[in-house]
Structure formats: structure tokens, C-alpha cells
Image 1 (cartoon, rainbow, N blue to C red):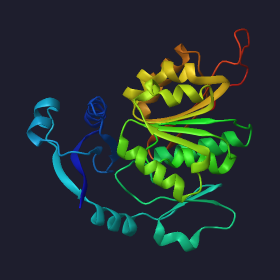
Image 2: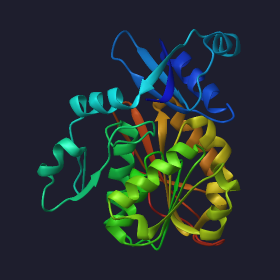
Image 3: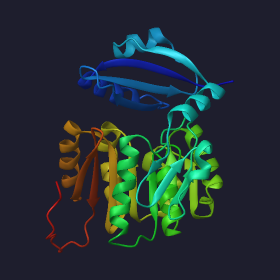
Length: 295
């Protein structure tokens, strides 16, 4: 059974960046990812659609030849089982059914099978967000969180399982929201989570849960720029935002935009060529920050 269609192109880094940003602007937006191939600076861009896109139309719109192939449910899972080892951080162990017997006793196990929704924990952006969350959770307690662009729901589930506090998760793709609910139920996180599809901060359930002590936004640079005012407005005083999906040369622009919105950079880290940022919102109109951002 075909579950979705993948459009794929291999391009130099900057061209891949531009194509990824452009694909994100489509309505409805496909799930887009970009990976460095390690071959002469080439990157692979993949866009996953719920209905089959036309190759000629993609070429006419973006000026890039993209090959479209159907993704079969059985073949996708089989490939995932063969190629994805478990991912371990200091607090979490993300695994597929083939590694269920290897979950360490001292870890929070999150079972996630590869699917049409982004976020199995193996990508540098997802792991970067998990590591940033672990870093923050050592220093403060969170009352609630928002997982913006949740994909498989891995970040929201990690928050729910570690803190047992409420988390709102949303994705513009209904298929991703459905997958997040399925995963949250499987991983005993659903009682703490409210999950629904929605277009950014326009979603009513996001407004109802605000303000948030923590906001995850693991998406691409273009959408992040547009969402920055919303991130500012929905953060609790002194709240944190963990942002990723950024290439190194994009992070400076995001930091500048964040600073213009009154969000302070707390920490910047890089993993597998992807940058993760921890930001902090204003604590009060007259308060001045004294900490120096990490590099």
C-alpha cells in the first residue's frame, strides 16, 4: 500500500537550502528534510507528499528536476528496521520494535518506527533538541511545553515522559498529527499531551495552552523566521525555546531575528552539521541579563 510520495533531488548545499525553503512554502506543506551526503558538498533534499506531485510541475515551479517515487508502507518499515540503530542520550533511548529488548533500565524508552512523519531521533536536529532539553532540565523545572511542527511527536513525548507535565503538540500535516497521537499512546505519553493539526500559531489549541515554559521548534529556517514573533508572544516570562533544523550559515540570521524579538541566546550547539539554539524570553521589562551565551 502506498502511504505517501517522495520527491528527491541532489544539489549543492546552497541550492539545497533554497529548494528546502521553497518547498516549505507550499500549501499544504510537505514534510521536507535535507541531508548532507558527504560527497563533494552535495545535499539530498526529500519532500514527502500525501498526494502524488507532478514532476513537470515541480520542475517548472522550482527549476529543479525532482524524481517522484511512491513510498510503500511495508518497504519503508523494512528498510527502517534494517538501517536504523537505536539512539541513546543520557536520559532517552529511542528504538524500533527490533530493539525492544535492549532498552536500558535507567533510560526513558521511546518506541518510534520510521514512517512518513519526520523525527525518529536519528537526525542531528532531533538529537540536538533532545540534548538541549536534557541540558535545560538539569537547571530548571518546566510547567508545560509546546512541540511546534511535531512530526512523530518525539520531542513532545520526551517532555511528557520526563516531566509528567502537559505538552501541546501540533503539525501542519494531519498525517503527522495522527502519527504523533499513535506514538504518544504507544509510549504512555498521551495522558499528558494534546495533539492536533494546525497551521503554526493560528491553531486554537496552541493559544489555549499558552504561555509555555518551553517551546520546541525543529523546523527549517524560513518558517522559523516567520514564527519568531509567535514564539516570543507564546513564551512565559523567562521561558525557553529550543530551535533546530538550521544549517550553520542560517543560524546567525535566526539569532539576529530572535534578538530583535527580545529573545536572548543561551546556548548554540552543532551536531552533524545542524545547529540547535536555546533561547530565553524576557523575564521582565526592567530586568537585564548577565549570563554570557555559550558558543
